[in-house]
Amino acid sequence: MKLVFAAFLCVCAWEDFREKKISVLFLWVAASVAAAWTAGYYMILLDWADMHEAHLWLAMRGAALIPGILLLVLSKITKGAVGQGDGFFFLVSGMYLGFWDNVALLFFGLLICSLWGMGMLIWGMFEKKRIKNVQLPFLPFLVPAAVALAAFQMGVV
View 1: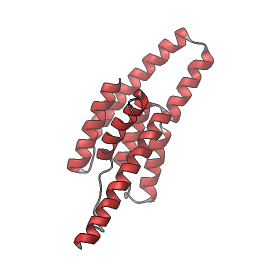
View 2: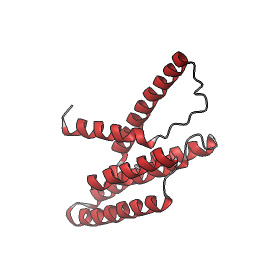
View 3: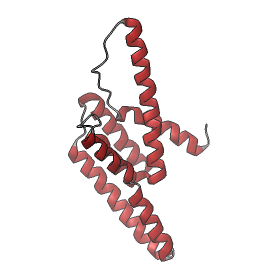
View 4: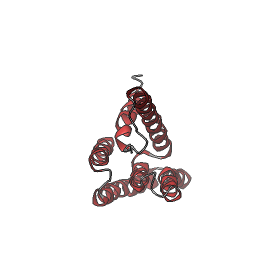
């Protein structure tokens, strides 16, 4: 399932970088695959675990949607300054990753994007370039964030 998520992340990051939007059809396909996997895993868990453990697992999968929901609300509040595609991406990624990994991906991606933005700001000051209206696509910053998080989880770093 991690390979499926990695492919999903790379395709979405590339689309966001190239076109500043994400294909709704691709999001639906990725969400359908994740939902089918979640349903199948839940059925297996019901057979092997007690009901309390199965319901707790399902509740955590539901909680994993919170970052995406918050980004969609933020998109409405900011009138699109935060892209809706980012919110929909995190809804789907929550189905693959679970709550804590989804939150970690969001915050680590924000850290990398912020560092890049500060670098652009400093570069613009030295080069006397206006970068006021530059829009950064967010999802490409999630690729190095996901690689770093995977390295942390495997104990490489």
